[in-house]
Image (tube, rainbow, N blue to C red; front, side, top):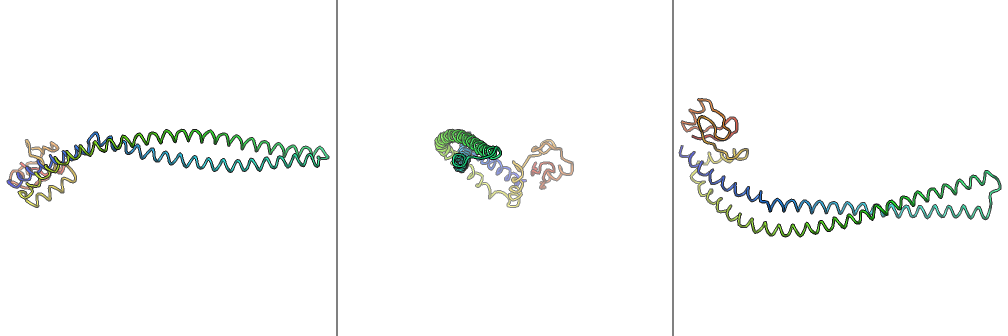
Length: 233
């Protein structure tokens, strides 16, 4: 029974230390810091994606401009051919005009695509500027939050170290086998130990069989079949 009481006293200090550690992790400043960090990473990713799209559009525009130049050269050749060697039959005229019409249609299609690319590229460049400003502002906020969190965490860390030391001071009073069991249970549920209250596990309020109650009262080591906690009287 004395071993269990020592373990119970250790748990009290251990849980206080864990509460401080959890408070540090749940700090509103830390949560804002992590949210701002995620925003920066998202904007960096977005900026790079826009950059890739702009580069692809620029490359496509260059290719289309070359195609336009080629089609314009073809159209000029057709005009030169018409002037130097006019078609002699209606069929030849019709074929020549069809070639001219095809070149003009091709040029119009290419020019329309170039206009679309220019419009989308301009929109992407504007968006890229917005993203860059948002990322810069987020970086400023991140640096400020980081400084605030470091100041806060230093104070909390000192409190945590002090509480951990209180818990560690009780370790030598606990049976090593019980302490090992305690740490094993703690990996799955906290607190690892619960009191027996009105024939129930105070951790999950499950009523226990009489045989189990008798074992607990006789100082035996019992784990709750429902929650897995170690139950002591």
